[in-house]
Image (cartoon, rainbow, N blue to C red):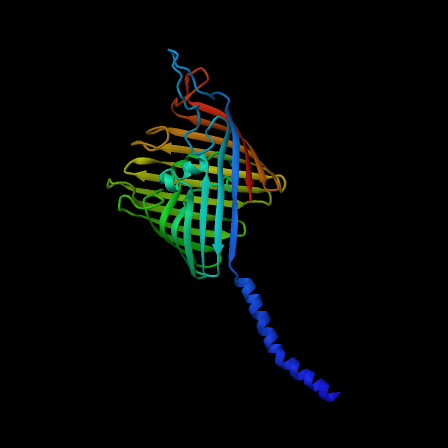
Length: 362
């Protein structure tokens, strides 16, 4: 009996290190195994104006024209009646050190987001590969959505469905090389060398822009200070933009976001600020407001013209059921000039509209 017991003990002692080593390798493989992901969204909406045109008009003389109905001079959700946004499919691969993202868009919203792309590649919203040197440094090469601003292209990540003026005339995307830094648990940084803004496929003018970001975050929110500088065309005029984006959970149910930005290209540009208060009534229902002031510079601006001021008040409700997000939205745009046409074809300085959006995220 002692001999048998001893033999079992020897086998146990011999096999134990192997078992522990194998278990450790399996656990390590589980921790470090690469992940391939597929996610994205689709969105559609209904839009109508209360005091503006909602269809084509017939001019005096009987000639029917294709007249663009009154809409804010901001991106997306501007078409009348029932309309579609985009289908968004994001393919991702995340390894221990390396990975990639291929973000594809189909539909009007996607086409508007990549407006400077060639027809053959205008479905590519983002396309980049990255290499994590260590926990403190990561390099990314390719095309990625802008780091400036509070709002983003995908409707899933925005509380309001329609977009702000600041988002619409700030950059959408950049193509280049960037380095992301993690200084500690709270502070981050980024430096980038990029093509001119929104030239996603290649550099047509041989000039480059510099980008930078300093970020701070904790359990209650975050703040990011962003910069971009560089010539965007064949002229020697350089664009400079500074942008602050921040948002904080002030209570368990109340969140307050803020975006302030200033963009200038030799006197042509804009500045603005927006507050984003949001109140959660439950896990599935909330209300959010965007209150935005947008001012175009005296030498010229991108929306309504030089020295024009715009106010945008957008109240949005958000209801989630499964992967479906339903967003009814009221929006009022008030402009310092008479830039809209009312239903009687008379010039007016304000426009009130309603949007009902459905977004499915997967």
